[in-house]
Amino acid sequence: MIPYLFEIGPVKIPSYGFMLMVAFMTDYFLLTRELKRLGKDPDMAGDLVFWAAIGGIVGSKIYYMMENYQAFMADPLSMIFSGSGLVFLGGLAGGTIAVTLYIRKKGEPWLVWTDIIAPFLILGYAIGRIGCFLVGDDYGVATDLPWGMTFPKGAPPTFSPVHPTQMYETLAGVGIFALLWNLRTWGRPAGSLFALYLMLAGTERFLIEFIRTNDKYLFGLSGAQIISTLMFVIGAFLIIKLGKTSDHDSARSLLARLSHDGRHIRTVGGWGESGELFTAGTDLTASHGLDILLLDSDTHRLIRFDRQLNFLNEIDLHNSEYGSEFPAAVARNRAGEVVVASDTDDRVTLINLGGDVLSVMGDDKYGEDRFGHVTAVAVNDRNEIGVIDEGRLLVVMNRSGRLLWRRQLETQSSFIEGVGESWLIGSSSGGFTLVDRDSQTAVAEVQPLPITVADMAVDGERVFILGEGGVIFTASLTFDE
Image (cartoon, rainbow, N blue to C red):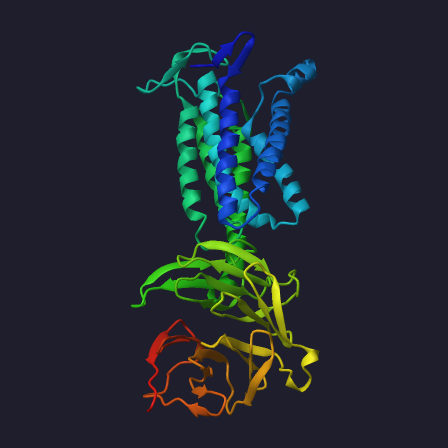
């Protein structure tokens, strides 16, 4: 037992205060790295830890004074300004309120941030319990187990072996942290990681209280057990509510990475408002050696992943320089510039990955060359941009938006891909047409596709065709001499 780590003259460094500092600094360091990974402002980590500390101290003091009401009334100033009384459950409530106010002020989505913060809550708790162990506080009831310990200088002292419940909670907290840390990159509804934290942390504290010495209040339960029960119930309610919300979205909002043989590698996505989560993925584009860009129509965002489907960053298209709502189609040229089209606008926008608008194509200034609502876009080997609108019109432009040529298509078309200097046009019924400036030729099929086509992609002479229901067909393009 080490109540003070060291003394320098009149200055004493208490072990509990030192471990609290270690907990906050560890959370700050890891949270900063996590925010960088998520493409968010890493400076928010310092603000979050600061407000969590302030709210936590105030909340823990209030909880402690409520539990010790008579002592507080006898000497309120002494209890308020003493170094004792930093009760975690009160600190959790106070810290949550303070952090929530900060997140709301920043205009950030609350559920998404609860998931980001959840692993650090339990990690800070686990480290803080080491401080309790060092000062001999919050130990358990008497035991004859071989690892029972005495705390002769504890608060209060005990000379009989007791359960070192502080270390039990440290081990449990580290285990919960490891689980939440691994789950943070999985596709899930926003808020579900925080809900799981509430359930696991509540269960851990509820069980440990049976071998603690705290006073009992209601139905033979301590105050901590009553609050832990509420934590579990709130967490379970969130899990059920978010699960019902996700039932509708999950079928249309997952991004999967497959190998060439079709083996599943990883899935991300789902139901959130930020980070790697999305609500309605409408189109994506990927290039060899580059990242993957996905449009989320519901939240008007362009989301960027690496080749392993790790989230990199995002662009809010609605709040960008040339705002675009409900983006429906995306393509990328060889320079890494991105073409985005919306199904509510009569225009196509060329942007860079910083969100800066490079050119706008369409709109009223194009007069009779204007196209209608865009259904698909693509870029060919000459960096020309091909656009299909709902009126079966194919419009080809250069990167500045100058019209090169256009052609009325003979069949209803939903998909377009660049093939050399030409365009492969596809329909949901499984028909394909190869179009260039001078002609459009139906692509011969060995056998008709037995599915409704949902999308297609071209890689050299191979065509990947995605059918509704998740079936993928591979075809080869061969050209007659």
